[in-house]
Length: 149
Picture 1: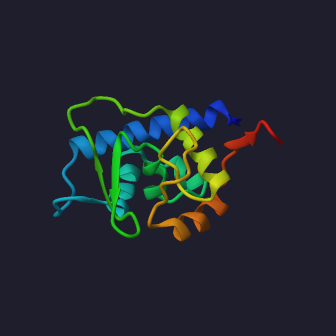
Picture 2: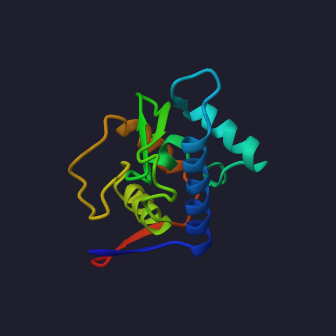
Picture 3: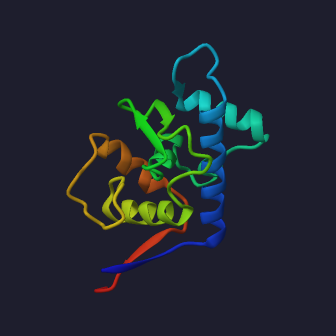
């Protein structure tokens, strides 16, 4: 057992940017492609909003940021290069910013991206070593503290 702490402002930024990314994936056709690449989605986000996404501020690759919202986005490819929204008919993201922050804190604790909120660290991703190197550089204040510490 443990607790997760994070700034409400970061949580809000995560949720708002996830909403915008989902809107782009639902409503915009990728230029000359059948599927969205993470790179093209990042460019479309910048073109639409005029700013970089919060994931860049916190040193999170876009594929990892999207993976924090596993009921909203699907990320595939060995380096997370293909992305899509899971339910095009939904107007809102399925995961909350709070759930994403908890996933991030649990992931930083375990060293591997965690889709589960229960802390079940048994299912590991095939991108584990890549994830660990990125998670070590993430600059958010989402932290997990064990109650036994």
